[in-house]
Image (cartoon, rainbow, N blue to C red; front, side, top):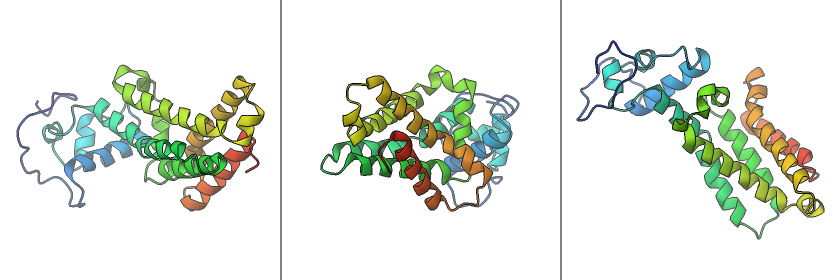
Length: 216
């Protein structure tokens, strides 16, 4: 692939040493993800080219294709990184039935906020991109839906789940509100990024339980 095109196939073989890459200590693949995260959230996905990502990472565009096929793969990996750790935790919490569901739901809310707001870039804004509905991002969509289902399962196990056992629509609505708060919290955090993330995450988890009706 020449440097004049924006997308291209993954090259085979070992990439050549690239003197343009800054000495950040990060591997080239991670460097590209950091660069893409910055450009996608600051300039926008449509306005960002693979050439710009490569240059921001300090490498040639041709070198970048040894690691990623193009913008879609970069975006997919960034999106999945905002869900995967929370999904691992959620699967474990759902199985811990010897502990109160309310506490487990609170822990998931807090950890999810820590993940979404703990990074240097507001990756949650990428959720709103129209491109995210495409088939290339099916894995991200599946992971996100599984995470939401885990929230629902934990909510169902709380006192509210018992009280509203005959009102499935009501329980689903409450879960939608809780999940919406957690995913939307990045917009709140962006207005004051200096807030300590840990305290912010705990306050958000408290608010989520109040929205759910568990009493916090």
